[in-house]
Image 1 (cartoon, rainbow, N blue to C red):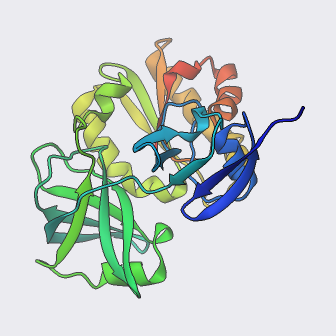
Image 2: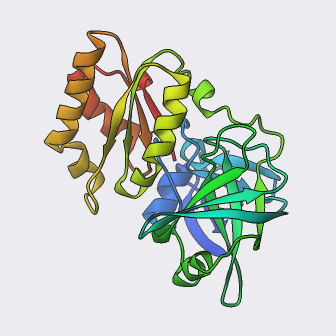
Length: 280
């Protein structure tokens, strides 16, 4: 007897899958727009909200054993923040400094509501401020609709924005939870995330004396082509020469490159998978 067919409802779209299939693989095979990163249950990029049971799940670590009703949006409660300052980082990114009830700091995830035609769009961002400073987030044109980006560019000092952050979560713990204190490390990021370079540098130089630099993938390269780029190998070799045999840890700030793909590149360099850390 074959497997049962089960239904996954993702934000109103129903997908039929076989019982026992991996949830993330099934969603991607049907063209669902879901984030993913390491596919090893580490980075949290593929987290979805199970509305039937009232909790979030990691789709890469979930086998489908019953019908599911899921959403890419986790539940949140918004508060009103006031815009203190806008900094243009590039033609495609701006940093907003906001005053409001927040204890978020570098690496924490927050949601910002922006006005668009017909309603409001919820933008997920990474806090980049140091602890106790006003909340600062980076908004990227590539991740916003045209309406949302126009709204962001039109913001003025003291304008109000609705912001939410995760409740019941220890804040500002990203680097501690990665276990990177007093280790030699580098950051590798997607082209879009190169705007975060000064924030990574400030956070890591304050956290570890062994931050050895940052590498950015070239725009529009696919995951596999980027990983095979000779310049990436040269970057790792220079970093390894500096550490003189000590373990070199790698932070990957991005998505859609699996742990398995990374391991094929890092193995010849004698960098173990447990020295690779995913941040979305």
